[in-house]
Image (cartoon, rainbow, N blue to C red; front, side):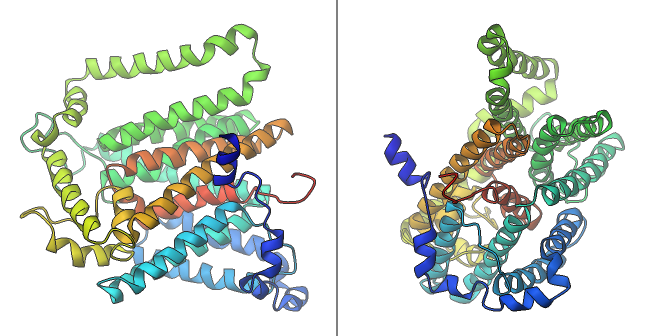
Length: 456
């Protein structure tokens, strides 16, 4: 069983032989002499980090069109880096599965019933994947990694602070986000600069996870206080979003982070705490959540609305959309209708129930299945397991080397899992503000892969 898992997740993957015979790999370093004589390319990683950090900092405050233009500029810069590269590339198993998912998406475009709009979605996907590749290269430097993580935390602090301010000022609601028939229909849901509570909750989940990691990585007292401040503000902001999927994701995030952090410090604990720290922590955490729910009638109603099925308007809407999406998947089971929300918007009206129009499938797994078929969904799930397995492997390696960088990976894994949990019920994951953060987290793990003989 262990051998099969190792085979599936590429635990012993060595790409050297494959790279030597790959035609695609031959373009790497095609103009390697250019980098040797170029002043700017001597600072290639630093310039890349600057481009990426500007995107991460300003993405919540600018339009999606501006983000798209910036992604194109990063893609152009990455292409220059690849053809002028004069060093041996680091090639993670994650890259292989990302490429495989990209290839399946390309095939899905060819067989799409709405090929032109699906191609537009494919271009967007390609830009995200190039952003991942460029970020992964930059994050191989621990100094630049800290710079980029700090950029995310700084932006998250601004977004979270404005969200809390909206709650204090009882900001005007931009839409009907609560069930009009529920007793919490008039409750305030904050949206900060992002314009939507669910999108806001997804955006600040990585900031929460990385601020928890920063508290343990940063050594001086003032940075630790800053990390604690970011954590507190973002937790408060996420609570004020009223996003049920965001709340569930937050609970999973904290539990996942606590579990991985326990394994990190386990060997340093006395025998009593090795046995009882985790049960006591989870027990206290669950008791605290239960107490909050019992003591707040509106929170209690909001939580209980999850379990009343179609009686809640939001639940009923999602169930109707999911039913229609499943029917689309039945008609396009293998390769789907092609990537992108534009392709979905063309096909979905042919299957939707009356009065239940939607721009997405309200589940990233259903969305993946409807866009790239069951083949694409299988590769996506395979990619997720490989990411988590590679991340845990690297955490063990950093722990053995007593390198605190592994705690950043703990935060990355916790954030990735939390976004996937929220993605079960929503598709804000596809919005550029969140999707860029997702691929940043994946790059944080993929960038630490090494295939030299010494480590093997």
